[in-house]
Length: 457
Image (cartoon, rainbow, N blue to C red; front, side, top):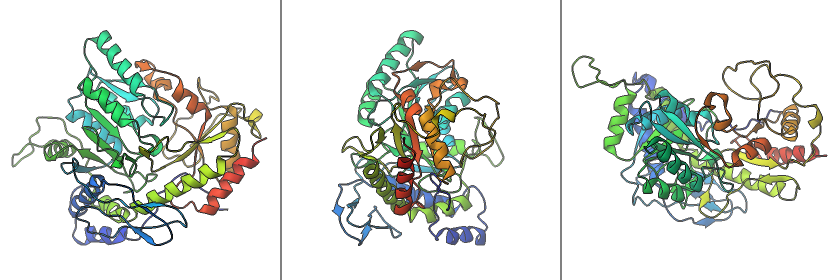
């Protein structure tokens, strides 16, 4: 059978039109019409806000945006409510978008524009991918890790406040910024986090790399704080092959970010540099891919959410397995990756035989080059039943992955301050990500559910 990957973005068929246009007009550079148009498409999307209107049946669902210029339809799944978002720009019309080469670069530039420098501290969510915290270290600053709350798996607001108080007591100054993450697309308790941040006058950067299309109280995540980060890597909700964007509070901030993203050149007829800049702008070719992808963004979101319902239904009667769904009505996750946890007591076929051989190369669909250590164990790893289930699914052509290993448990951050309650470590030991992309059919989801069931003893 065809291998089922976690999440690979699917082309819309419209991408080649914009790519060819870039070649025909010779805009094969990190600026141009596609970049500008892609930023405008993204701005329309993040500015959309409204009430949910349910629609049943198989008729296409229209998704409205302010000043809409291209068609957006979602084919409704049979007998399943879909969402019709009507545009309301109140409080969001000032937002501006800068298209960049990655989500990591977006975090980096946001921190620069917030004045983060060597010797500063930045509060980071521990339960996430390393791209959320690495840019802090690029600047010579220190990440301060804060653990999760159990409902959304994201930064705990109470622990956040405790960490701020303690850092002020220990260092004599408050952290320079807070980076909150929308893990696997799930909205954080952003209102509570913002309340803490505003009390101490600390700006918030929202890492919404995994949360494109997720909403909190109807508002697109990434639009609540000072800056919001998007990613268009090949495994995200939509892709530009590689790329990202930064949601800025206003035009002034956008211009400053663009200045740093294009090598920080001063206004002279020759190259004059008074600040350090970066080569972070998105190319016109990649932006063309993004424009085509925007035409299917809502379709992709709807499909991920549909798969979430299938998984939730399939696992609800299985003792020892819990599907992570929206905890309450404020959260409307895009379910970029659907996730489950396995009780430690759950017995899985082959779990006595795991962790006996060192991994040599990248596991599953993991990209990039890995360093082979020759070691079998680390000081914190997924439980044996989780690893056994991952291996069993892999043998069936089903890619699955453990949840992110918390940053406070990473050797590279062993000296960073951390405020821990044990939740992220527990989730890492018990959790598994399941295939969730546009290419996963209803039949595939059922096959995956049955494969998991069949490997439980």
